[in-house]
Amino acid sequence: MGEPKGDLVFAAKRLEDFIGAALVALGLPEGDARTCGVRMTEADLRGVDTHGAFRLPHYCRRIRAGGFNLKPAVRAVREKAVTALVDGDNGMGHVVMTFATELAIRKASEAGLAWVGVVNSNHAGPAAVYSTMPLAQDMIGIYMTVANANHMAPWGGVELILGTNPISFAIPAGEEPPIALDMATTVSSYGKIKLAAQKGESIPVGWMVDQKGQPITDPRRSDEGFLLPIGGYKGYGLNVVIGMLAGVLNGAAFGRDVVDFNKDLVTPNRGGHMIFAMRVDNFRPVDEFKREMDRVIREIRDSKRMEGADRIWLPGEMEYLKVQERRRHGVPVAVSTVDQLRRLADELGLPDRLD
Image (cartoon, rainbow, N blue to C red; front, side):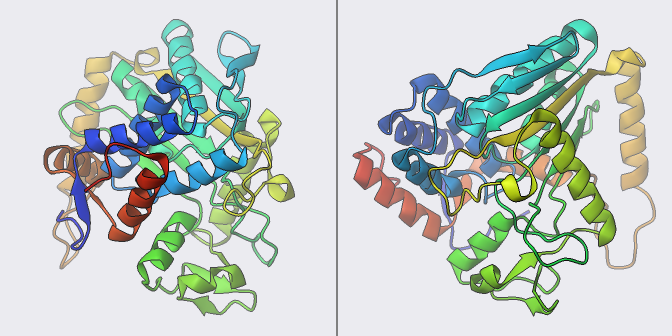
């Protein structure tokens, strides 16, 4: 579980405060800036280094270009006992999704379960940040979203008409770490391609191909091709269904309507998400369920291993341990990212220059 060498390490609270201060300096209300700081730092704590502080410079460019509504009226525009449609009013995605997830948890507390769709949102960070929020209330969480840029073609096609479209499930356990599956429906997220390009690293064969189907290993050539789906045509099918449930169902952008937020800093994304929360005690007593979850988790972990395998991991277990480790010892941030953050601090006159 050792951290990458050559990165600079910062306390989680310091990163959280730095992100919040930068966003306040650009006009975001203090409460919303704090929410963004918390959610983005959660990404770094989980080891999703492409969705935390790494994203701040781009968010700031978009704010300066007028691409975000800094004081949105985030609200439910359609609502029933177990459903709601939230209009994010082009606000910061972390703010919009926090509102939607908290609404789903409140509804599920009263009605047993809730499905909340979101429209007019923006990039909100890793899926597991939201699917795991219901865990504290002994609930199961499911999150899906339409990615904010298209980097994948339909199976058998070459037009970039689909995104990475992530999905995440979170299931509580007892003494064991909760299960938290968080995956893009492409072999890699596009953020990993960007980070590799920034670091001057290559990417593995099987992540991207060009329009003739030949592998791309130089991330700087990513514009020449597209990401591949997980599991071939099965991953493509899952990707499309997620887009329809998180996008089409909510009236959000999907397919050719998706705005590439990496290149277009001004046009509203009309981003779509969905969050589902459900109480475990709809089906069985919570303590009984958690004991059974622990038993099943241990059964899987202790099952016979392949030769050379040191350990069998459960979904989300590595991230759970990484959060604990990084809270104790600090969050590693790539030197290239820190350089960008320091330039941002200079531009905004922030008191902390991450020295």
